[in-house]
Image 1 (cartoon, rainbow, N blue to C red):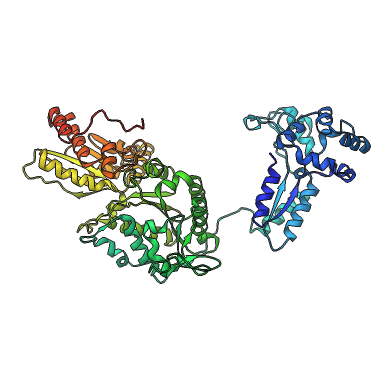
Image 2: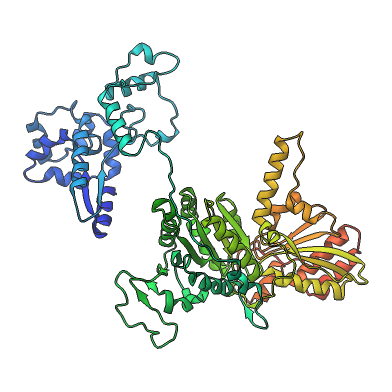
Length: 621
């Protein structure tokens, strides 16, 4: 391949000014004499890999393989260059005058961005053992001979005796040298000797607590998915006088899937050219509307581009001193799995904002099979230390989490965190927030949502659930009470990842402070003293609830959606992964049997009654 030409075509196609620095001055004599273009043609036809080989070859090889035509042989003979001269014909990126000329031309060019494409040699100046060698990355030390070559190449004033000592000397050109004067001048121009991050943001007025109240009221008799509930909250946030204009909604594709078409009439889709066509849905109330003043970034099926916008808006508080709040909503399978590196980069830049994994879960996006059904994004998010992750079951939980997140990210001084919230496309009746519920427990990640019916029940158990699995857990609670004499409390666990981080923080503190009061992880204290086994279930892989296993007192079992997704109904998928209500009930009975509280025959009876195939596999066969 020819990487310089390939990159040149990309940048030219994008409207950039391209400056190429390919050959050093030692080629100038040959190029000036190349009146018939034979040398340039040979350069253009030689692959990059062959040039790498020439770098490590002697003059004879170069003469025979590069100057291999009568025209090139004649050109070389007339130049007076010998075979000893050929290996030192330099590349443009190592010719200081050529590099300087390129930068000078770049700084003087106006009207376009400029890119400099320079031809260089990997490991240049490090000697023949390193230069252009494919094993360079595995070579960790320089020999004394290589050090001397390096010294000579860079004209460093270091003696052989110094290099032959135990440690090579640290070279300093002298405080009054041109190099040091230049470095001091540049550092002064850049604001000082030690780079430091300066954030100059002005405080903004945040919404009052009441703005989040609508989602806490529940949906009455109407079924509403948590994705739709958050879009409702987003509409209210966009109306806020100060915060609203700072929100940057980002959608890579299918805004209507997420119910965001309701934002089109007011916020409009940003386009630098405005609306220059008749939208096919223009007769509809919620038709596509583009505007130069549009607020929605509808990226057009590019998650990578969406993350670029997210990082730009999420760091504007530091870059421009203005708080912006990117809210990037996507199919949850296409977030961390496709652009995890970009999310890590955004975190590294200390970006702030919301990542919304809509249509989350392995079983809710039924019919779309292996590609779309997400059962692992929570695990991937957990690997990023800047990402705060929640898997909410209810709209009121989303309201509490969103309010806390906005206060943390946009408050003074603000925290450099990114919130990843999974949301579902399964409509259910959204309950109101229970009276007296401490919102802090939602943020901690675990609270008792529904106590079991204790009247005349012989056995007790605890079921922890999140996301769409909450509905299944509540159904299992009813089955256990009505059919198996078990009173099960159902706990909402929106914060598996947060509970895990609290657990490892407590363990670390206790390990390093043995003589001080030992800290107890929140999940341990919350479940301390509860009766019966604990069974956890989510629409994600078992490893997600398993994150809290080390700190759960007593017996702990986990259900989840390990394996690939399938195209089928939600009910069939949940039976396939054994997270449906009946499978949860069987898991609770099985744990009670292990504890000796019920007979094993009871578990077998439940398996038969619910027609569960005990030998079915979740693997793709």
